[in-house]
Length: 146
Image (cartoon, rainbow, N blue to C red; front, side, top):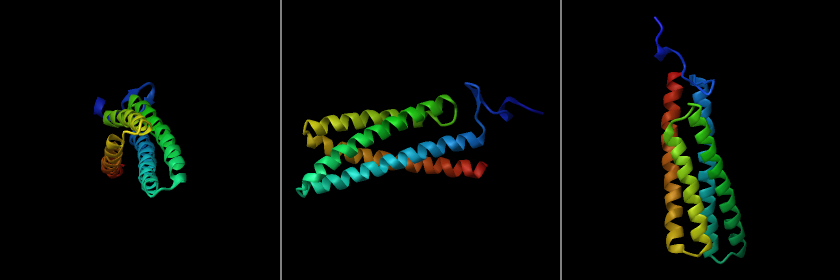
């Protein structure tokens, strides 16, 4: 006896079997890890900045732009994958919030409001670590079902 629960959900003509959900998670997981690496690089370049390195200013600014692009990519990918039923809604929200926070972070950094720039940077790192942890939990749950 077949029920609606036995068939894959169809949204936009794309089926959402376990394989496509796993691929969606894989994409988001990689983007989160890339953005986490960029945030860690920002912390390192900020440390060099405080040590007086002139090159660190350029590196910090360039990595900030790379992080903005990474956050935008993660946000767009998460929304597209969510609309296709391949990832959960919280991943799309997290991607959009990440992009907004990175834009705010760049703005407060450019205006030299370091009292706000530093805590936001720490929050970005913590938020991406939390996303990584949640994605790993989902990743292992998806592997167990396959």
